[in-house]
Image (cartoon, rainbow, N blue to C red; front, side):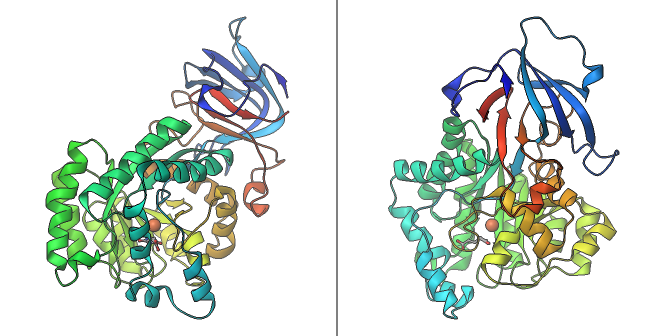
Length: 423
Ligand code: DI6
Ligand code: FE
């Protein structure tokens, strides 16, 4: 690459230039209405003060100020920065031992019922120092960032007491400051029943509603609230109570819905006006219709289906028929989706769930931004949006999903600053 380049890949590497021109590029703007990718061939972008000021064919590029930085992308493709809208990337320990047990035939549910599963990560997370959670979370987030992710959602849910849940959310927020990746936090207190509440489910749900949610709101640590609606987790009725408390505090809600069994989770999420219902392998037609009517987005998580060796496919055709927008995310977590590669995730979304490469990419850009309520700021290459973008060494954007985790990210731009560039 030629032109001025900002060395290194940390936030300290250089403050973003006031004006940056990216030229000699093809753009997958992901703006709907044009062709599948919102393509602009032989395009250019003008970035000003951290936002996109102009996008279009290079021949129409308005003259920039003489001191503007210019980056020649040599015909590479530019997409919006990837948005990983569903992760659990802050946690202690790992679950490789359970992976081995499952390969010998134990099921995810058997391990959970025997006190392993989520609860084993809860023990490791409660025992971890805040600094250690920060260091391990940072290592994982940097892997995502190098692969084009500029915004990530991070859930709590491995603390299951007020202090540890808040610690997880604090770590998630701090990771944003340390890495420069935009972080949205989600309180997932209703992830599993902690051992100290065994036999008192109602008591734990009260703790989530009456103490955890208010404490997270008070500390400004939660952007949304999530719950796990499943036989091995919480009933629709219990999740409904958590949602009512979240809504009363003005927080948007999302749901882990119908992942392993049909619990009516999709319809429950829709009834509560959830931003998204996530997983949905076992969702039925009625749930899909309810989501369409409520404007609830479907977040598909092929890494979890793959890692749990579940070949049940979410009702993708019905989502398309009823116009439910499809987002795609890693679900990065230690138990069901230790998936550290957003680009491989695009591939899995196509191969396992039969999305088109364009649906997979819009699912990790435009639609993912919608699932986070950030569609006015990120998710497409349009004037006015934040200058978050990724530059790829490919000849066509379908290659992002085609190479199984192999498409190379040549540069990431966040808020107008170029963070990683290869020559
Ligand atoms: N569904 C998932 O796939 C993750 N959480 C959830 O509710 C798994 C969490 C884990 O197994 O640690
Ligand atoms: Fe999840």
